[in-house]
Image (spheres, rainbow, N blue to C red):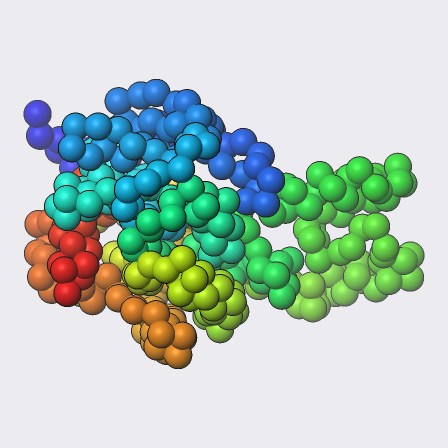
Length: 358
């Protein structure tokens, strides 16, 4: 039955009901990578193995990374965040690793981690690489999360930030705060957030901060709504340097693919995309923030990442350009401003396959 898009009250539920499964897919704390998917999930939409990696379907069999055994055959990986993991796909069969495996006749394992930044992607690979001595190629299908996380550069500093960093930081700080400072944080955190070091702030400095806030000073005004392209690129650069060294040592073919974002592609929105984007921007803060990723920002970011890859000798591909005007407005590629539909995954996997052939 066709949905009347003009009358739908909740297009996310009506157009993409399977997204509720991703919403409910839990996370658990893990050393070094901070968190990972709940293991042994079973559903019609998404399935994970005993370590939390998503299943790849290939030649009638299910493959995943879990377990201790060494894999003696050739294998390739798709690395990245939630788009590489397959958020938006209606089933494991419709993820990029599964579709690319089908098209190429070679096994691509899913090394995607929801809400992962560049450092987490690299660390995750380092934890499993020893099991795959015959790694053929690695496609890093990524870039968006690093740019999004640049909003939190003040808390992350040199080492970069990650999603849920404040919860980790808060849990650690709470364990060492005195009762008096815990009370101080309780009252001031809603106003100043992480702008104050609650464990070290002195009384005279505290009065200055409060007075500046009352007086309308902007010195403690959060500017985390702004993306910092240079900061994001520097975080990518640190990790891509290591990726290149690893690829030469094992060795394997390494590519960095800048993932597609609707407003970065030369494509008009489909009717479904337009309805979904309007709804998400109205109902979710994330949807509104994602809409601020402008074409001009993309051009700066893409150009800088391409230069870094060229300097390091890493093949760079911009999926936004690879999609370009080769798809029409009727093609419903995006489930939201970050994740792909089944059709989107099919189109992108075809581009990845052609890239592999070249």
